[in-house]
Length: 118
Image 1 (cartoon, rainbow, N blue to C red):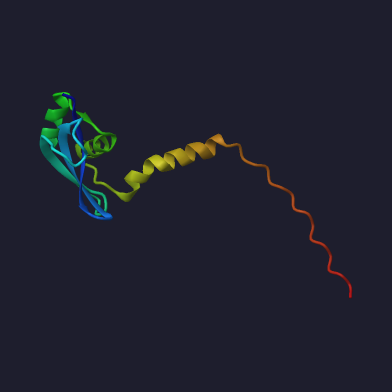
Image 2: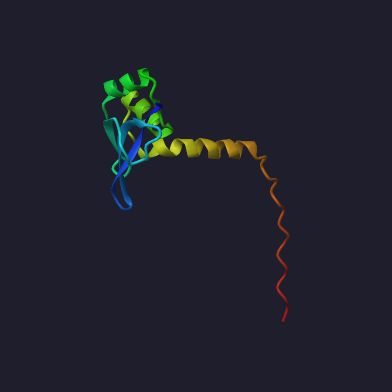
């Protein structure tokens, strides 16, 4: 049995909230789970994680999803979730793409035509 630590969606339509759960990898996203170890609310930028239990499950071989791994790293460091935290990856990619592109040479503009004499 492969065990995962992942998000389980709760909340209303267009108002997502998630629980951080330990579950069998074969179970559906919102299906049966082994243990709930935290909450994550992306709208209100709040995270609550039972870090000792998360560490226990990771030591037992549970694999956290990419998002849960980021949440656990923030919880270990004690840094709060900020709007910039989620955008950091996109900004890094944009900066890398801008640095990779050679700067285009400016195009010389043609002089404006003289007004017609009437």
